[in-house]
Image 1: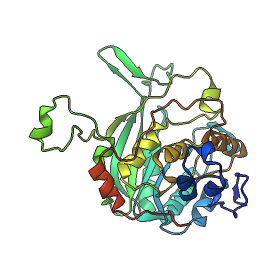
Image 2: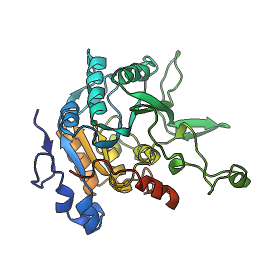
Image 3: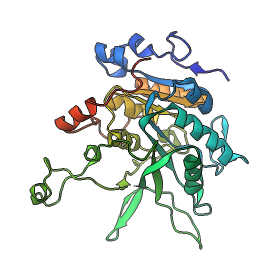
Image 4: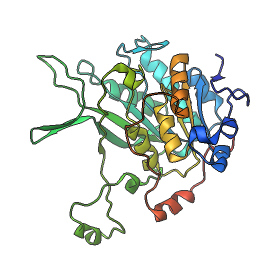
Length: 324
């Protein structure tokens, strides 16, 4: 299958140098940043795209594959008879591309009639050679003291509850990849705990349950006509949690309308995304260039590490995938 970069710059089949040819004002970077960082949307099959990358060149993968539940995507079938064997091939390609100390954040969920989808996909990931280092529960909506926070899709059923969460599986090569827990930390309610637990700042690990709500939307257009867009805060938190330094390479093999690459741009990471749909690729490119009329409101702009000491620690790790 042809690998096609949809940028207008003619810098080779993957156009790795396209950031240096872009107008820095268009991508929100300085001249130096634009020469150093890239965010590329490449129209191709995910396996072909992953296999085209140098082995071990990717610092982090953040993605959400189709769940095989009949969702209507542009240019793809979400109803495969060979879904799990196909996913195994995708996961093997991810394993090949990921660095030995890299993180693969696999976001996947089930539906009330098929709640085992995440575990079936995880089984394939383990068979492909990954180790489950962290299991994170992504909570979309929660009710506390009769008040609801967040958004969910209600179902009308006499058998099932509304489904309010999905999973983020943090997969690594050996279960010992470094992380930066406080990069996605939360403050203590009782600030006396800072001294009690010998913390250097008012931050603690927030644990493995992440409440990341969707913004309120009024139409499908506000999620870029894509049935399963996750909030920008989700890939942002994954990238920050991984502790990789700025300039590392992050890949999304199911990039859709570019949410992971938006997070890469905000966090000053190199980003590459693959998708077979020309419509989604075009929309992702427009999003990255700021020409899409829909405003990005999911989460405020953040930095990969909030503390100078942690930034120094991250900087001591090699930048993976920065030399194309």
